[in-house]
Amino acid sequence: MAAYLPRTTPSPVEGGHRDGSVDKYHFEARWSDYGVNIGNLDLFESVWQSYWNLSDDRGVSSDALYRTLTDNCISRETPPRYEVNVQLEGTWGSLSPLSGWDIRTALFEALWETLNFLARKAKLHWDVYSDCEGLDSIGNSPFLRPDAACGPKSSLVCDTACDGRAGVQCRTYKQAYTLPETLHISLYDSADVLQTPSLTLTFESRDLRINNFCQTTFEGVLEQVLLRLPVVSKDTSFVISSVLQVGCSQDATNAEP
Image (cartoon, rainbow, N blue to C red; front, side, top):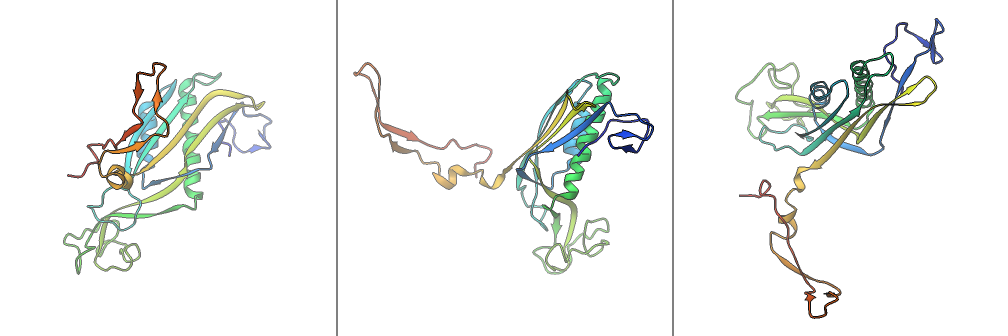
């Protein structure tokens, strides 16, 4: 997929324009084969806003964590399912006749349009209705809102989203995606020579349900493992025990009370 820098004449023909002019530079977008479940991550907040808030005419380097949902029709008390790390890395500068600010804008335009292209084309996307009420009660939820994403007083009822459960109201709707782990934008000149400016977007996702590995494996108990061979120094009077003490260092933030 190619995304071209701003041009004065539209409608390129076979790499050029009807008036005979040729673009001086063009972009190329490449993405990885490995897909990452990012849940209902807000792409505008995590990518668009991060880029424009943190980049300048020389580059960008950002790294932010977001917690997302992935299941449909879930209550307001449902904890996040994934923790997604969104990284933006890029370097650029002036490139005749363009300034660093021009390159900054053009690089992101190419990245954003490619990301939207992938989001539309990806077969792995689904609806996530959240902040749902009335899931466990009979009848309507107590505070019906016409501006809810779906519900008895909304323009859309939640029957389909919530498997036919009547009276359910969900306040929030977002789409969830599986997107490529890495998306890279490169810049070439008209002779297809690679130029310095580039921009890379990376998604990393961690399933929060497997945080408590200590509890599910060792339950915090210190155990012993016997090494195959004792560790001996050149000084034979000093021998390291062949008994290895093993234990899990539990993160206090993930520990259950």
